Length: 252
Ligand code: SAH
Image (cartoon, rainbow, N blue to C red; front, side, top):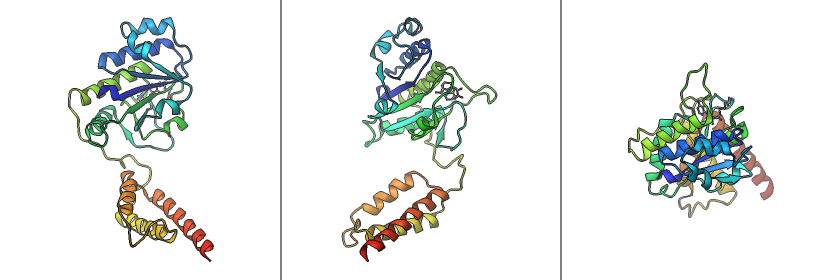
């Protein structure tokens, strides 16, 4: 299962860190290394720091864009040394291991690939890069000195992946909705939104009430997987109101 975990280094400046990453990965049994626009690679400093993990370096794939490196991954996770403006589902490395183990051992998720992104030495990942991710992972550190060397961060994540996937010590899977900036929508708000959604889908002839199939349950599952908050539900309802208005105009 460890071969399903991809380590993605974005725009790394120091080739020594790429070598140290390869070593950290091989120590823990990971092998899929992708480099997005590395400043200097291949480089003798990378070879020197890999010390024995040269097969991982030789197999590393280089991409011109992050999107290409992630195209075949089902779960994308971004690492971050500090809190960002818009909070995202945030886990610690142990929880990430548990989530990964659950995904990779599930029937539907067995063939999945998980990418973990690591940022630039000086500035980390950009907000746009972090917004490509399903969730973020922060390694709990001294708040006054929170930034690890990038290869050290890879070591911590790879270790937890090994513990969860190989050593079979998966913990409880965390739920979204914790550490959030806005109160979660309650059941009544969600139900009103689903009623509104269903009415709109009927109005625009997407849902046939005489043959509804599994459309609503599937949409419910999709939306509820995200554990929407009050503002998100309001945005969805605003969109539905507009759709209703336009549909009304057209049919007249
Ligand atoms: N000054 C940068 C830190 C970059 S450290 C910043 O403020 O974002 C380089 C990379 O190492 C980060 O992009 C991240 O991928 C990883 N990293 C360092 N410390 C981390 C931590 N405490 N938790 C998670 N990832 C961390």
